[in-house]
Structure formats: C-alpha cells, structure tokens
Image 1 (cartoon, rainbow, N blue to C red):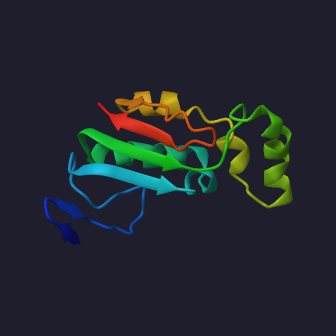
Image 2 (image 1 turned 120 degrees about the vertical axis):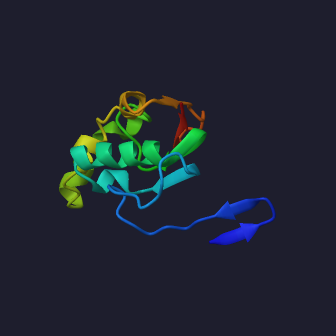
Length: 124
C-alpha cells in the first residue's frame, strides 16, 4: 500500500477472476495487455470482477491490442496474428464487443478518442 496525502494506492497481484477485494472498494481498476490472452468466458468474468470491486463512479481502464475495425488498414494483419504468433484467444478478442460486456455489468463505455485507444469504462 502506498499513501500519498489524500490518496491510497493498493497494488494487488492476484487472480483477476476472483479479485480479493471488497465490493465497491476501488476507485479504479486497470488491465494492461491481458485481455487478449484470455479465453472469451474468462475475459467476461474478469470484467465482471472489476465491475464488482469498483466504487460507483469508478473507472475500469482496459489497454490492449487493436480490434477489428479500429484501424481498418490493420484488419488483415490482426486476422493473421494469432496464427503467426500462437495467440490462441486473440481471434475471439479482436471480435469482442467490450461496450456490450461493460453494459451487462452496469458499466458505461466512455471512448477516449485516441486512435490506438485504451478502452475506458466508467462505473454506473
């Protein structure tokens, strides 16, 4: 735990499918280049766990690879990537609708506007 004036930062290394934190206890949850490594159902469970621990108004920040349609010029490369680099879950990741998943857990998607954008999701 790091304390900086008014803010406390808890750095937790744990299984994202079962975050060992109380409900509604975190201002933010981040995931950096992890989601494309997970099977579809596990990805959804992880987002659900993040939603569970977020306080109302908290932020879930997802930073990961491009998806189909983000940069159409790269779509063919994104299709080949899992075959060239043994990424067994990437094919599903590039088609995943994170906005719909966020909504299913009571979260709202707030686009950042960046071209290779992180996926910012705001709680309730």
